[in-house]
Image (cartoon, rainbow, N blue to C red; front, side, top):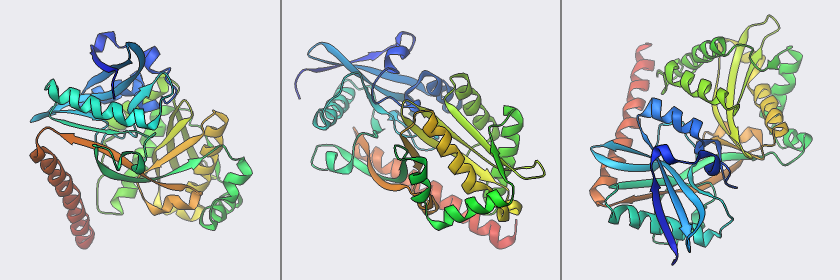
Length: 341
């Protein structure tokens, strides 16, 4: 595709106001979210200005870091970060979007800026890249369309969500926005420890990193926190969503096992969905493919994660490392459950 040019912007010169004004903008392409990644992942912001026929049309928003070799990622696994990628000031066709990625990857490799590149772009589906030069991995998950009425959203849920919501109401469970962030985080993390303990594991993120995430996003008012409280005033389930523009992400949820019979989780999700709808959110992404998410009336998605390597061995190395990490966690889980620790 002719006429596209790329300019890497120095960190101090990034015009975040303009970046965040793009039509396909999400919370994960904000300066605040980048600040969170800088603190917790030790990355550098990597923003590329994209021009077509010398006219600024948008940006690529990602991160640069080094693990033996230099990686440009938008985003990388394990960062609690959903789709990033291109952020466009003007509407472009899918064909042009794919072409920009092809050209950008070639530019980065030709200029020896990185050895490995990956990006996940919500605007792209598998069919869009299947017949291109782009290599990709499969991402599976669920999303919910909030453009429907509140009644339709509830009716589209399965009985395994609607019945617990009705039961929670009978159990006098109330859902509220927490009054104090620090105590909310302490309770949430205690609940998270309880959830992972049932699997013989520890949470993938520590309390410090979660606190940085929540407090950073509170500063820009791009987070919705909610907690389910028993009739005795005990916090028994917690959850939070990140949002910006018309897109939200279910970033975390947990509850105490001993209170499950009161059904605090489903009513929390439903109240959060209503709150997000009032905030103008249209799409809620529920993340990875855990099947329990289907009961909320979600739609499954299959998206591409664009991957490219200057050297084939780097992709193989990344794949082996990722597989080893998850297999090790599974082994630890089985061992701990077997020995009751």
